[in-house]
Each structure stands twice: as C-alpha cells, then as structure tokens.
Image (cartoon, rainbow, N blue to C red):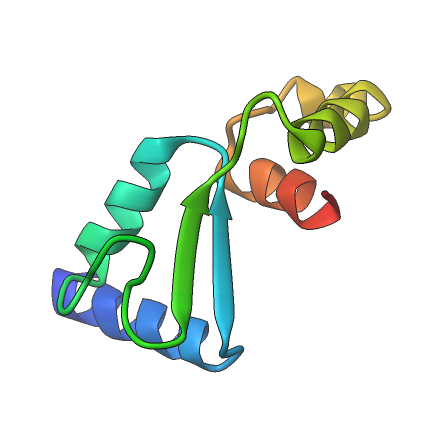
Length: 92
C-alpha cells in the first residue's frame, strides 16, 4: 500500500483501541512506526493517546518473552517475524 494509505490504516487501527500503548522489541521498530504515521510526533507519543516505548532487554518483560519462546521452539525458530514477536510481546 502507498504511504498515505498505510498511515491512515495504522492510525485507524491504533485509535480503535485508544488509549493505545505500543511496545516494541527493538528501538528501530518504534522509529519506523513513528515515521509511518508521521505528523505531530513527540518523544513517547505518536499523537494524543498513543504511547510508544522500546522493551527493556534486561527487565521482567524480556524474561517473560524468553520463557515464552523457550516453551515454543517452533515459534522461536521464526523469531523476529513481526507476527511472532507481536504474539510474544502480547503475552508478556
């Protein structure tokens, strides 16, 4: 899809569950999301009601993600696929 269609689709998705909190497992993921929905971004926020952060690689969330992957070796083999990582982060 083109950039404007992607931007609107993302914005619709994020605001349909407002207030939304986006957790990413890699800092560049947050930068890419912010770039995709560009407009009015500030540190920690995309637009009003949408907060973002990168996951602490040493924290409790990381421990839960790692435990989830250890118990699911088939999914662990596909780690870094966006949907697989999203499932792990959702669980955490």
